Image 1 (cartoon, rainbow, N blue to C red):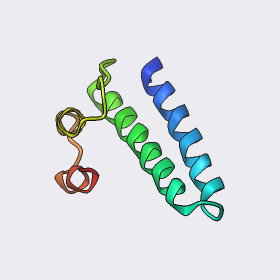
Image 2 (cartoon, rainbow, N blue to C red):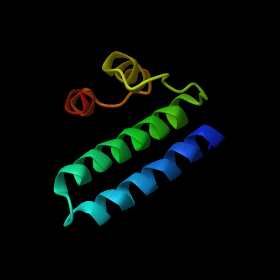
Image 3 (cartoon, rainbow, N blue to C red):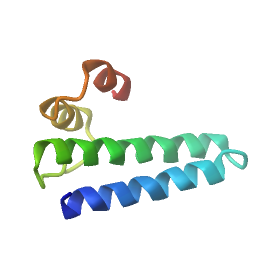
Length: 82
C-alpha cells in the first residue's frame, strides 16, 4: 500500500468517525462528512488497484470519475458517486 493510499484511508476513517459523531447532533453535516469519507476510500481503492501515487488535484467530477474508471470501479458505483 502506497503512502498516499494509507493517508487517504486514514482520512476516510477520520471522516467516517466524524459522520457517526454528528449523526444525532447534526444529520446534514453528518452526510457531508460521510460523503468525504467515501470519497477518500474510493480514491485509496483506485490508487491501490492502479498501483499509482497520482492523486486527483481537486474534487471535480470528471477527474474523480476518470480515476475510478481507470481503476475498473463498476459503472453503477461511478454513476452513484456523481
